[in-house]
Amino acid sequence: MASRSTRSETPISPSRVRLVGLIAGPLAAGALLLIPSGLHAVPGMGHRPAAAAAVAAWMALWWFTEAVPMAWTALLPLVLFPALGVFDTGSPLAAAGRAALPYVDPYIFLFLGGMALGAALEQWHLHRRIALLIMRAIGTAPQRLLLGMLVATASVSLWISNTATAVMMVPIGMALIAQLEAGEGRRLEHFGAALMLGVAYGANTGGIGTKIGSPTNSVFAGVASRRLGTDVGFLEYMAAALPFVLLFVPLIWWMLWRMGRRDALGPGKGVDVIQRELSALGPLSSGEKVVGTVFLVAALLWMGGDFLRPVLAPWVASAFGGFKLLGKHYEAGVALLSAGTLVLLGRLSLQALARVPWDTLLLLGGGFALAAGIEGGGLSTYMAARLANLESLGPTAQYGAVALSTVLLSAMASNTATVNVLLNVLPGSLPLLAVSTFASSCDFALPAGTPPNAIVFGSGYVRLPTMMKVGLPLDLLAAALLTVYGLVWVRFVLG
Image (cartoon, rainbow, N blue to C red; front, side, top):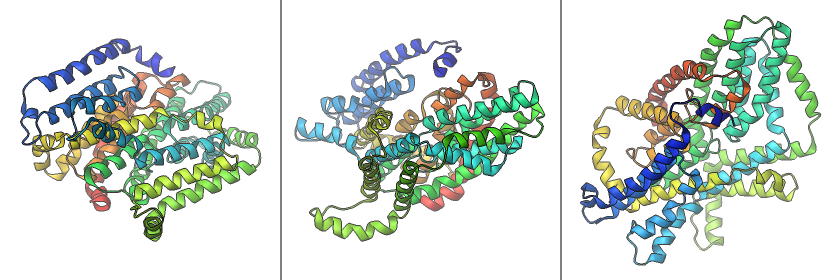
């Protein structure tokens, strides 16, 4: 609802953009496929690079303009790759199989299990209790209250979707603002906006920190596996991503407090709201204890995968006819086993599972299928030659260009659509792809990039000029920090 009302303020209506995208997608595909170009001249590839480029352009235009639901766009490779002969296979059935295989990638099942665990946390309100306890621990003076909102939102968003986190935290934030306004006897326009933006920005940034925190992270892991033949472990990913979250959250707080302090607040009364919310939750229930225990065990198993998987691999190979247990298989198995355990124990209901965004799984599958088509159709070879200039730049210029372009693109399109396209055309450097992935969640200036940005508009405290005034400097700050962070840290961890 908030998203629609916000977008209607723009000069070009969303329906017109969608209509243009709907027509432009197949037209661009037809042009790439039929007009002679270098795509038809890759040695030994025939028309296949042009066919892969045609499907990629069609999907990119539909994703960026949201011409049709994004999950529908993700299904295009199932039909178009076999029909256009993108894969060099001996039969239509084999081509269809290669097009369909990415939709059952283990990383999709990892994200499925992660979403199910998040649904269990939501069902028992354990995520709400964790957020409130974090806020109470940090303090309720105005500046601490803002920091607590940011840290609590980011902490929860590490493990459940940023959208669900924002939906949960907005009512808590609104209750806190109401309490403060009652004590001050006036509307807190600046602090209210800072607190609401803290929810959006905390949810976006926190989702960067773990493999299950955002669909973009699963896209990165899948592309790394399929394109580069590299399995990025759960702990390895956290080692690369989580320090950025820890560095950037204080910078967000600093930017927001500069705005929020203009209301000149006295000592806060937020502790009353936090205590009342905790009291309403009551004592820790048996359901919360079971869900918390299973979730903690799953997290420990994920983080200990590099040590446990070599122990399990020989047994799995013996039991399943030589099956090679890769990191993605292990992590997906932990996720599904944990979710299944909660279902069997009656701690994860079908109603909670029904609220899981199942279409996200199709979106991931479509991204993986696009990557497979770009690689299998020879488009990656063509793109590598065209991107040689970028690879010839110095490391600082490379990371800066990738970070800034990703941040800017994700401001206009969803972060998942952004990484689905960029990770398949950027140079095949794992640290560079990781920086692009992190940058895709760093849209702070416009409501279109991520759902949390749109959700906070429903609070009545955030207006588009306010978000842009705070968000644009944060976008640039994120791009600059990611440039240095990529050079100094990500290359060390993933290089």
